[in-house]
Image (cartoon, rainbow, N blue to C red; front, top):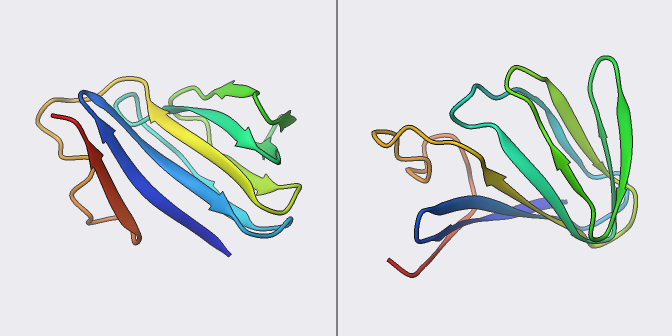
Length: 110
């Protein structure tokens, strides 16, 4: 089961994903230039792939996605945890408004 918590620390916005079991998937999705992210694997191991590439990323590894690059994330180990952080944002968009995600929001700092 895949679960997540949204994170806001000052101007830093991201999402922490927990993949309970190997084989849990964050389905294929795409980002524009204002919501593209980097992914940091905090624990476990992740496979990230798109239409023309795939990479296995161990704990401590990072992947830098490009805008317009569809990708899917697959946990290769139980209890894999990743952090996605936005690289660029439009100030007028509330990225944590809850309209497109289901889960918890963690807001830290101001």
